[in-house]
Length: 339
Image (cartoon, rainbow, N blue to C red; front, side):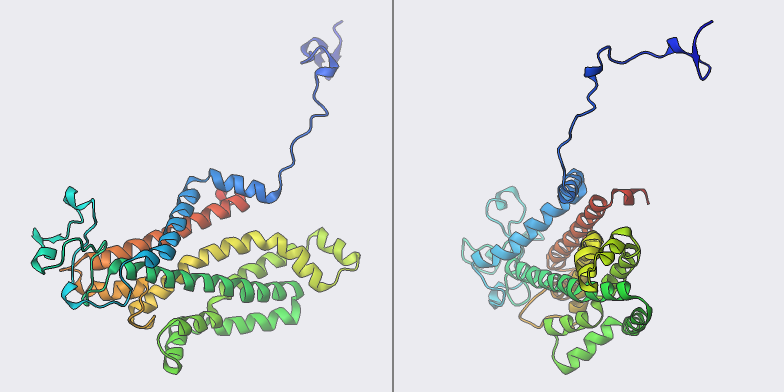
């Protein structure tokens, strides 16, 4: 009678390798750190890579172009007003050649030969190229400050509120709800009345309520992490609350904090642009992307480049930061793709 194992004939089983030494039971694999794994997943995300490249290019242009430009952002030349874009090399191709409606505006206004305005000029003859990159500097500065406020204030308050819980969490959350109930536009308007339109008013408004979304995300992550075994082990070994909160829990929520900070950058850029558009942004002759759009839209029908160019840069920044933030989210937590 044929020998069987659990009603399955023994002859149905066979070794993959005849020699037991062929089995690689002791094979070792190279150690990969968490951050290296994150970087590898991020590098495979084409959208995130494209967004990062665009961000780097725009930041580089914003830093260096005003330094090497032949004009300043506040230089006024009235006989050069409303000149269309003119770029050396491209003019021979029939594009960016300084013409509008078939008329060479540079020749018509007796502009000296060899004069080029890459993005044209505005109603005061100021170079849009230089003003655009200076305005991008202002918008990026606001975004960097917003991230710093998120990380310093929002992360700290969220960590304290989530870790201690109880009455501490109750009072902090009621305070946050009160601040969140005040519209940011009203805060900026009040600061403008006390100070003046500009970066200071926007920064103060961000200090008051801009960190609230970050604090809520951080609090939610801390509430989940503080119930883990490693927190109990640290407390059993005698670690104090400061060490557990900032040395044990914080590194485990840092991924979500970084992702949230990336998403807050386009939000801050849009907020600054919106405030500048309604006249609560930086004061002339300084410029930001929002103030350039605000000035240019009035002449959109006759000189559309005054609006199209800053809107394009603003849109590229917003899209690029969102793509990069999406890539970071997927890199830190690949399971988020399934949600």
